[in-house]
Amino acid sequence: MNLTDPIYQNAEKAREYIEALHWPEGPVCPHCGSGDDRVTKLQGKSTRPGVYKCKDCEKPFTVTVGTVMEDSKIPLNKWLMAFALVNGSKKGISAHQLHRSLGITYKSAWFMHHRIREAMTSTDDSPLGGPGHDIEADETYFGKNPDNHDNRMAIRRMNRIVSLIDRKTGRATSIVFNGVFNAETISAYLFTNVHRESRLITDEYQGYKRPGLEFAAHRHVNHTQDEYVSRLDRTVHTNTVEGFFGIFKRGMKGIYQHCGQNHLHRYLAEFDFRYTYRSANGFNDTERTAEALKGARGKRLTYRQPASLAA
Ligand SMILES: [Zn+2]
Image 1 (cartoon, helix red, strand yellow):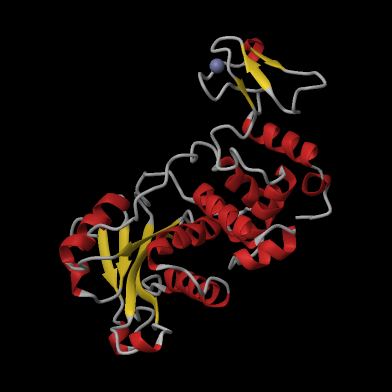
Image 2 (cartoon, protein in one colour):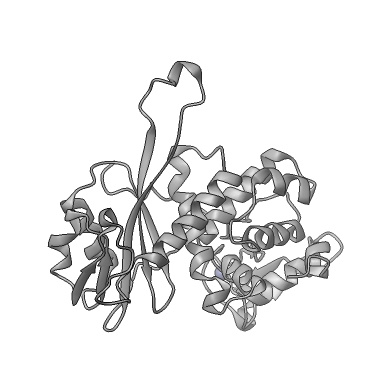
């Protein structure tokens, strides 16, 4: 990723880049889906650049209509740079750093960051795994101590997170359990998100036992007995998902100190995305950023409900 590239410096070059990414076969009307010769480019002194008109529904549009960038006053080259910065490091970047790097207000940077995270939220509902796949499942806690003195005696507000990683494809998906965490809720989550023909690998938590019977196989390590890799089968471990938790926690500690509880699932989605499209899975920074930009479409009005099973 070269931030001196014209697409990061010039709004028109940025627009052309986004158009090529979203419309590989030419402009498509976001209102009715028409394309090809049904769409004409509007040109003229009084016309903004990048405006097209659809001959079928007669509505004008630009490439940002129907994306998280719609209606933004921020120039598109700054949007591209923000997408690149958020996707350019393992742990992400803070809104404060975006604000300084892009020369925009903190409020604008925070807003952009939120929208970019929305673009990075997976819409792939298909379960992980399948025949011959190993799926690691593990839980961790994330939360912060109340910093206000009056709240110091309050119970630490910790959120339980469960992450799943498909070792074969490298895909990661996570959830925040805001409510009850037991065999029943974890079963419901596993059955929805993991293909039954996968081999499930977990720790010794009892809640995995019953759902584990439904998969091709279920193996576990005994973390309470300091067993991190099974002595009988070296492929039985949850080190991959624990590595993911490590990246997540280091990132959250260093960068996202002020994450509100109700936003945690959005931050997790961002880490899931970067992990799924990481370099070890064959994506360089530019390709990862392009995937995030493609995800910007169709997210305009879909502010998802918190990904919790029992709120
Ligand atoms: Zn149309």
